Length: 298
Ligand code: UTP
Image (tube, rainbow, N blue to C red):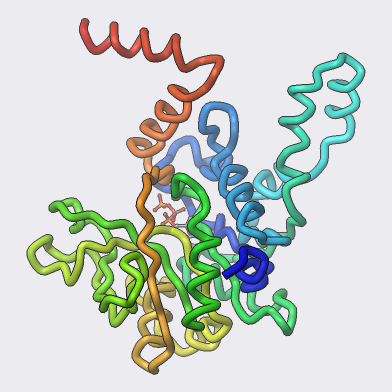
């Protein structure tokens, strides 16, 4: 299947960024966690770049009142750009231009944090009539290397329906995740999903395939979101809507991504991501590596 045909599967990529970010308090009193830098670049810019690479033409950022800085990051900054141009700071200018140049960006407001499912439901009215599927990327989940969305689009072209992303986690750590109940297909890295269990004890997990923050959702998800009932804390869970689609016979598959990930949503995972990216950075990597080695010896 050609990449261009896979790319037609979706045009809009939704990035839900309206959560409270309580695990990052006190910083998130005023700074959206999506703007915390991984070395020098906000996590949401890395995720927007992934969406653009996969062929998305439009980023729909779901924000909440008071989180305007997230969308502002994707707006041009003419005064700053002019100043950098005058001073001949071309490399910095390129960094400043990168986010606005990636793809078209629009925002949708979620007025109350009623859960990920509710946040995704907020974009239903802004999709064009011919958008049969939409991608969702959680901005606090870095999936590496990038490219899984392109693969997911190919799987949707082949099987239809909804396609999710999974990691193979054979050890006891599986109990920290949502785990898919799956059946094999002809492709070892594509499984048909029959159900999902949230954070099961490791010995009761239905498989070793854990959910990651990438979704290619058939438009039917919006109808399903309207029919599920809120769970704990009054939140609408996206996985409940996917479960309803499965129950009703709608095809749902996972692509098993053989790679790494970073969870930017909590300080521990964020520090790992920061160090990992810094170690690969041409300016900071070598120095950090020697400092870390000395620090760990001492
Ligand atoms: P998380 O649960 O990881 O984020 O939601 P959170 O709620 O902001 O963080 P904590 O748990 O309080 O620390 C996953 C993604 O879904 C978005 C979040 O912004 C995050 O990117 N989200 C979550 C919404 O957009 N709206 C919601 O109501 C809930």
